[in-house]
Image (cartoon, rainbow, N blue to C red; front, side):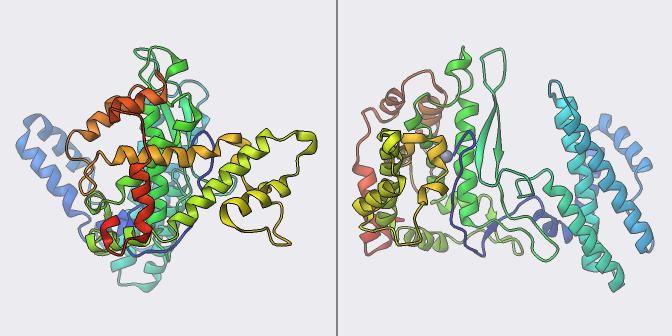
Length: 423
Ligand SMILES: [Zn+2]
């Protein structure tokens, strides 16, 4: 969704997950202090100008810990980092005027640096300290650091928008203003007993919203704000977002970032193939359901408000597309159909754009979507023009013809294939 619209994605648990910021903490545990030291030495020996700086740093920055840590000193150090992080976060929130690299990104980086410092050490102590009481304190401190991370993160928290969406922040105007947008998401937050793993559906949601973001950013270099970013046509805005969902079908794409949080093992290609195969189950039924939702949104819109009977519309349209009748006690479906307030009659855009997306994706190598000239052509011809031309022109420029149903039908029929060819 975009502009405050929601993504309703069913949740399930999987073993192979994407590391969130907090999940990277365990990966650092085994090789914690060595890597930065080596890095400093390499730089010191290879660059004379840097050498003096590194030498100064080595003098002013003793090892994080020397001797036997005790609980009081450990917690003092941890709380100091977290207090410094909080003061950077407070500074970001307090800004009233123009946000700049200096007043926002630098403060954000400081907050991340201090939270990471607290989390790394707490993670190490929790794993190795000989005193079980200190290990317990370390675990509590790790939880506190995770909570601090949540205030900067895509995790849920009280009072926050509870779905997933891309929100526009600034229009892009060529030579005058860079486009800005924010992703608001609610992925599992890490806790002391649970590292906050993202499952496949979370990643799909992230890719979907990231697709909107890329559309906004790459399309935000027009001469006029009014034609910057997303297509002015409501029934094209869900194409760039659903395009990125398709990337996840490639094991090669997943292998670049989705790893088992303990072993570091990439998601096995065979598992991805089986997941792709499983994802075809009920595809036709879900498509019919989407058509039912689209019909409800349109029928609500075209009805005379004085005589509008939303329950009757839902019942009729569900029966028409899904052969179902609303059971007694399940009426008022429309009251939880959030898109009615935002997409109005245009809920159909999801299926309409899915047809376009499958057509687009048929020009990509499904095993390696970054191969060939399709990715660059897609960027140049579909994303970068932003709202400067009609969506039908974008489609024709990329496909060399108007969209058709061929690829979409193939995608639908994958449910009935007896091999895994629909992967
Ligand atoms: Zn969307």
